[in-house]
Image (tube, rainbow, N blue to C red; front, side):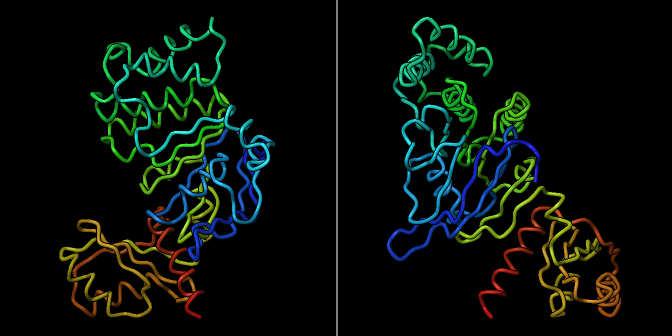
Length: 315
């Protein structure tokens, strides 16, 4: 674990909605000044966990502290020290860009003398000067995203919660957004971001993989790749679909994912000579292909850890 101070901690964090367990005994320890990701599909518990950590939702069981504050007992005080950006644009669409930021400055009770300078600073920092008089509802997806992040950071919080922040923007805006997050982390801000994009999760310093409300893995992308119980064999074939069909008949291969002309084959580390078995399988099927063992990417890791959980549940 990182030697930095712990900014966010949770033990046995659980949330039930009737008979549905949305989050199931999640433990967290997030170092200050890092970008920590929640990776998982819709319904995996990412948003519910974030809302509990923000003090917006009371846990059914377990405890959590953020910046040393109990998220239940000190929820009102906590909200003044964190930034929270929801998946959907949550500002006032009928107000202009400046009016939205000015209103948020009043919500956070910034001293009157600091409000205008801080708003002007954010307009410049987030490239919104040209849109200052434009109603928020008429902004593009990327502009709305920048405005929402500016609002969430207006009071200079030490911890920032971002719930699927890039789901409605194009790749260029996503890239620019992440550059801004790295700048903030470099200045000491702790950022917790939920995503279902594998490439975004790979940018995080550390991440947790959530599956049906359960944390099934936790660590840096490199640590997660080293610790899964599977080898990954990459196959490049002239006939990738034929190669996929031939390999799918072998029960030793846990999953096969096709990416263009490439295949990613997940093989348990308990299977001896995984690479040799894949090559033999392809030769016997008379498939022309090259195969090599490669380091797992996050999609491989996600498939591996969720497969292990499903096997455990089936026992």
